Length: 330
Ligand SMILES: NC(=O)c1ccc[n+]([C@@H]2O[C@H](COP(=O)([O-])OP(=O)(O)OC[C@H]3O[C@@H](n4cnc5c(N)ncnc54)[C@H](O)[C@@H]3O)[C@@H](O)[C@H]2O)c1
Image (cartoon, rainbow, N blue to C red; front, side, top):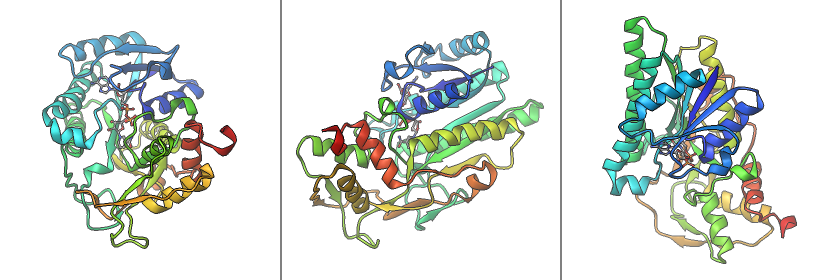
């Protein structure tokens, strides 16, 4: 039996594909390469398909039957918050449209397990620092909303399947701040998150900008929970195993380390690992940035027996190495 990985040519998806291959699972990648990179899935079975296209359900059904797929991990999505504010319809069409087509294919083929890439963006601006899964979700942008709607769609499908007496189970993983590289060639090439942005600016000889240093946090800068992409990839394997062993108690899990790091701490760690002095510029606060957002990871630890192995230093080191910026790589 095979695992179908949508968005398998992307940053996170390609890490999961690599782990699945390492443990001997058959993998089928579905990707439209809109942001994915073909070299990440070189030599693997790949269907080049826009999951939001009108013929996507039919093509998925054919691919599932042809490759003996019995579970799906769904990464493929647009993920830029700013872009989602400017082009909400594109985000509904892509993120919600693609998931609709996948659920239709699941229904047509009787697939029993699905893992969905959700996000801490579903929480919005919570007024607590440590975020548990039962907190009210109030996403503040169309990107986060498409993730929450995706969770609801999956829940509705689970209910419908129980009513029909068929077995469909799903796990929704809410990722916190994903960073680092498990393998340098699979590193994040998009310059949208803190560590790639700082490294990119250093390469261009520019200082990083800190957006707000007057938050109510110990050093005044925002605190986030950074999780190594390889740890995150392992959480998907744990989710598949949980469903295969009949686990259904909970379907939504935070994926983080349970420990926060401030923007200043991240920049200091980059300075330490690269062996370079970094003097950041101070900028204004950005709208929609909560002071601190850290995952409560007790549920995933209890039910999926998953715990992050890597800390901030290892995350930063792997990203710096992938960028060729370790002192010994000069
Ligand atoms: N990177 C993060 O920090 C982060 C945090 C929270 C959640 N997520 C979620 O994780 C998932 C993967 O993110 P990533 O960082 O690997 O992004 P990515 O852009 O590197 O990967 C997305 C992949 O999906 C493919 N894709 C996009 N739309 C498609 C479509 N309509 N049909 C077929 N393929 C399509 C892209 O070509 C790409 O290979 C996304 O769902 C994202 O929302 C990411």
